[in-house]
Image 1 (spheres, rainbow, N blue to C red):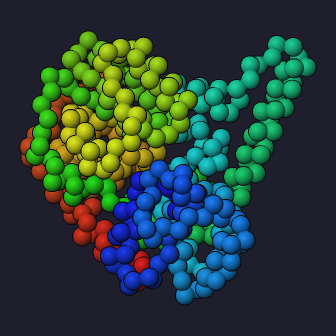
Image 2 (cartoon, rainbow, N blue to C red):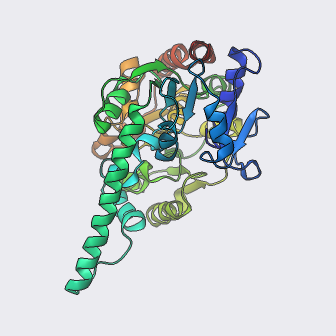
Image 3 (cartoon, rainbow, N blue to C red):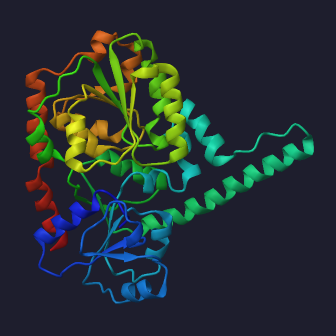
Length: 384
């Protein structure tokens, strides 16, 4: 696992549904540098390719199960070195499948404005030369970048072929997307999801916060897949309305965070609020209760926990119809709205809240799908 806000909750869940001392939980990193994981059963591994951890892997047998949380290329290559008879379960987090290797995916992950920023900031930061010889050097550098990236992608395909089970939350669209991107045959899928805050949000949803503004949340993190600036451009025509933009930016990339803040302030000035401090779960849910409308401008699955919390709190949620999460909610009968259509809506249409019947319908369906009871039942079947 990686040091992430979902991990302590997962370990608690796993301990609830299995026999004592049946599992071990390995976290990549150094305990002294931990930001999120604080569980006493977490075992920290500074180097997963080191001798000590390799010895642990070599002690695992086909009677055991390995679960990977964040299956990037670095971890995937390690999994290619272990006994093929050991069953491998992987929970796709999004970035590990859709942004690794990074350059291979950037064109479909990002909208035009964000894509220009990404290419300049992360792919090829040099200015294009005018002199023919220097220009040729630039082209050769870019060719080398793309060649190495393609080589990494081919290795990534091999690591995905090693997976025995993908763990997904009722999402056949996600499964098909992964298969199509990596051109792989069928992989078995089993239901799984982390604690997405349904039960906590359901407890807190009656504590409504009244505001003189219409509070609009954009995205969930300081990562470029949020397409913040493209979303800000769409909302620009509502600048004269009584609105406030709230942007959670507490984790991700500092340089991208500054890029988003700069662009948001340029357009909306004093109508912006940036959440740059990581909040404990309950505090964050209370903050979400201030939101009236949330817009997730991602082209890939992201912010699932935010979406479940917001819907449970009775908020209006916009997702792009090409986002697999849109398909999940549509298939389940959960009421969400198409972010691709915001540009054609009047402010009244855009900001019209859900009816009480719509809110109750969403809560009922989410409860059936993503409650603690369902989550633990799924995990019990996986681990036992």
